[in-house]
Amino acid sequence: MAGRYAPVPFTLSAEADGFRSNVAPPPRERPGFGRSAGRWLLGLTIVAGLVGSLLLGMPALSVDRSSTSPQQSQASQGH
Image 1 (cartoon, rainbow, N blue to C red):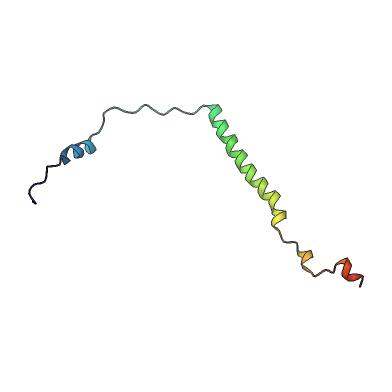
Image 2: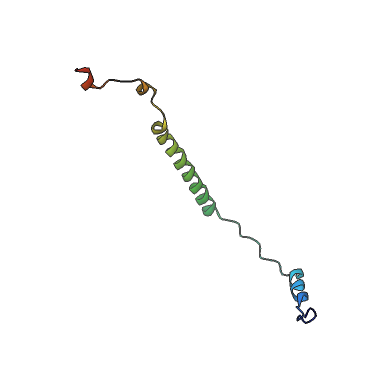
């Protein structure tokens, strides 16, 4: 049964891989001033938001060194 396989047309797929078109794609459009300004503004807004959240979040993340000393509560001072 080794010799009874149907032939597979590999030549068609090999020719399709090697095919190159002679049609050039159209040139890319250059973005206008409005689109470029919009991209810059969006990037600047994202960076400003990240920096602002970092600045506002730093006090919450910092460890208060003055509160690490043991303090007595008012109830324990009365006894």
